[in-house]
Picture 1 (cartoon, rainbow, N blue to C red):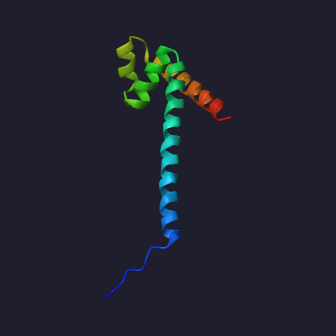
Picture 2: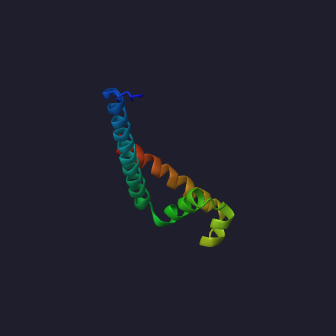
Length: 95
């Protein structure tokens, strides 16, 4: 008759710590998303729309310009300023 060796306590605690580590990572990801959502919500509407269309939806500058009825250079400025504002707001919250 072959008997199985019992698992060591070390193996159990390692598995448990992996679970807790994953839970911490998921929790951190959730708080990061909340920070990003808050930073996005604080942007002016025109910048928020331009940033989301360009970055999240991968829409080109000409298409965004046609959609909102302004020039392509205005859209580029809105995206640039919006991203700069997001960077600054997210850095503030980290510090």
